[in-house]
Image (tube, rainbow, N blue to C red):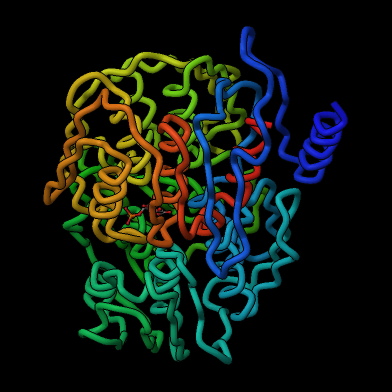
Length: 481
Ligand code: S3P
């Protein structure tokens, strides 16, 4: 009795401490709350292990949660705020490690960025073209968006020398996709394998405008070239094979750049020479983080979860379309617009899922959600095929290999394809030791798989979740406390 009371007291204190905005409203007819330590983070080793014992988790995911700010929008707000004249305020910034890397890089080049918090961050920009030569190497950590977008900015800042690097994962990821078009614009960039991999050295130049036909649908490539175009005379254009996320187009326009978008031909353009002016940005919740709960509440029986303040930009909502096709029960409430981005609260209830094919033009609109969709597929009736997704091989890890290997360890029937995978659904998963490959989305997807697996799952290197979702594990614990 006393133990139970103390535990309840502790859980409440924990919730208050975290300020998760998580309401403890429970589903009807669910068993009494489970033990807190059935979801436990072992931090005794240098790498953290997330242990989830699903046999003890008999309730659904219920209540109301808020999710952290959108990672893509957070990076862009920090970057454009740094390049603008005057003050930018950012509300709801993601406090993950990736945006912290962006803030550190731009502070090192003279932007005055206040202490990062999710309430209010102020950025005093130094005006386009005025970035200072940093005294040290710029380190983008694990963040491909920081490094690739920043390269467009650095390459177009004449007569300054920059060196950029990242962690082991980022140093192995391809940079030629941005270095090649920047070189066509006249950029001077050096590095290993003809500047295909970081570390890279850059001497900024006056660049020339080009029309780049990108072989990949990538918002990082598109945004890099657009940012380089800001300081380049004339009109810089990029055409991509499919439409990728459009946060740069929206935010650049809001800050005063001349941007045009031709949706029919997937072409965007930016005119050089405009002045950027500081803005008030409110960052919506990240649909890529909401994705874990959208799938969790769909596959864990007796769930009824309201996810508040989710960005539903149509270039990001592929996951909602695919889950709808799979039979998920998700409804939109309180649709609204927040600083130029559509937002809604999403209510998700458990449902019987069926398999589907995920391929073609939808892929860039759900590329980061494929690991968690693969988990959803293990619980769906029939065989789900994921194709045209070779881009997954060059994310924070090779996400095709990572997911196929780790799902197989959990007992899923899954086959690797060069451009995706095939998952036979309906087989009960069994908990075991799995690896995150230091990839935040792999770690969190495996944690959701653990909720429906028999017995105990132990996810190694689970601390990587903090890259994009520092409160993921506390939120999971609180949902089950
Ligand atoms: C991002 C674009 C995507 C995505 C990444 C964030 C962005 O990468 O996977 O997490 O903010 O522009 P690609 O542009 O390489 O597809």
